[in-house]
Length: 330
Image 1 (tube, rainbow, N blue to C red):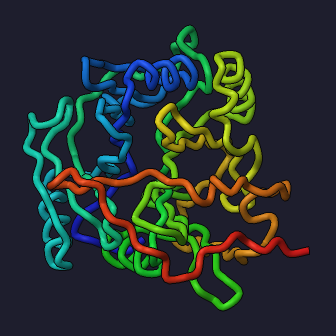
Image 2 (image 1 turned 30 degrees about the vertical axis):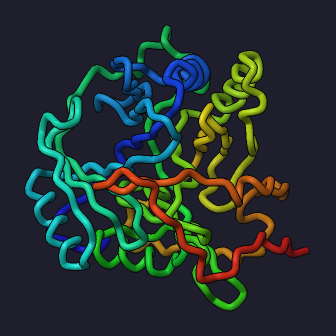
């Protein structure tokens, strides 16, 4: 990994705006098995069974379903000033959120990245007891911890360069077109396949956020639980296995249409001499190792980000590479 004057540890939370908190609670807590740390009339704070941080998913009641921010944990408070210097040097918008502004959070720095994605960086969050061995609370997908986010951006190469050269990320796997253009990239700070992925498409938009599970059976159990609760329509893609990352997956849509991936079985990326794996866009094993195609809406439907200052929806731009589905090679 590149050496920086700061250290980003991992992706740590997603903040979503939802239109019906009770419907969201039923889906995430009773369906997926997340732990509800706290809630009030306008917020629900959720976490996975092994997480000691207060929450990794914050649901906020709103009139329209959008994505407020993707949050990263940093090593120490001083890192926040260094990250602010970096973003300001690039002419990118930043905003401080003083301690006490957000429940269970210390001071945070919000900023728009080079693609316009609203990010947040923090060193302090309230800690709570892990529920890892509270097997009496295991239900649904038995969600363990937040794993990654995947965003559609109009220029994947530009996003890749910013995260690799300026934020200290490394690349585990990437996809190129037949012309050698970068179509998608999987970037990491923690030693797994990714914290942040980018895919070619109208953006900036959130394609999905993902949680790690202990095993494949947890995904199958979740399908049974969701179907029995009347959520069969929420199962969008899978279960299956990705060629890229090797992970076993299931894509779901929550009551507001936000896409969440349940994910298990990727690999360690600890070694500094690890070479990124290249995939051809048209390789049939890339997206789904078993060969079946994703539905069109998986490619075309995404969640909208909002501006860190105005709260208005962020305009998206068309991708510089013509959008298309992979041509499945024989």
